[in-house]
Length: 285
Ligand SMILES: [Zn+2]
Image 1 (cartoon, rainbow, N blue to C red):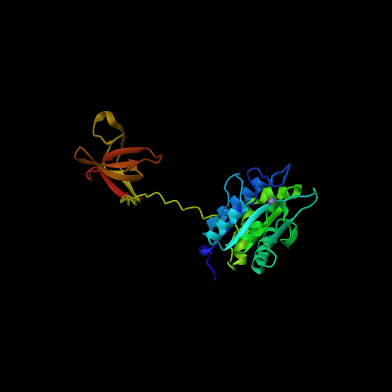
Image 2 (tube, rainbow, N blue to C red; image 1 turned 90 degrees about the horizontal axis):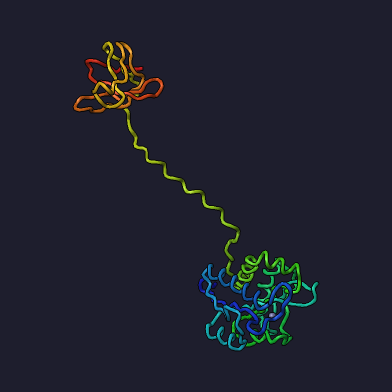
């Protein structure tokens, strides 16, 4: 069985240049075919399929030259995109194939079956007409070839569906080709969004405070405490009497060669007080 990345398709757009094909108030066939060809091509390439096109802008195409290109490139299949036109009520999808070619007939059937998920199924038809010369592509190519009349450019509902579901219709064309080659189309359901990346937790260094569960108690009368790490008078914030103190001890700091405890009162205010065991002691709360 062929693998998807071994597959090479000619995805062509009908008309172009001075030949707009059909037109209506919904647009020109040459433009819509190019648009859908481009969407189908990008989708196919996203799956790893090699694709050649006959034109990538609004230029005239040459059916025989396009057929020779497909033959020279040894593509596995040819799909040419058109839009049909008739009275305002005519609608639906048709797949054309070269009469007598069972492979082309099967390809036309597979592509038609996918695209008619979006439009009325007009089924496949053998090429018995020479209408706008389009069907030469089916006769002159050596690979299985089909011509897709996607829907009716003259039909309002068809064109509303086309313009709202163009991406899916482009995928359907490619899936039809994959069906022909017995390659399972990828699951086209929207992927579940990836779970939001878990933010790395801020790396809070684990500080083991050796003073957890301890309180500071003064062993002295009128023991001074300071508003900042300091021993100078102007930084004295108050005094604490013997047996009283601070409920929370945060750290021990060195202040000009002598240790102080960084402490917190019951209201959360931070002060500094001597850490000398001569004046203070730490007690379990
Ligand atoms: Zn056409």
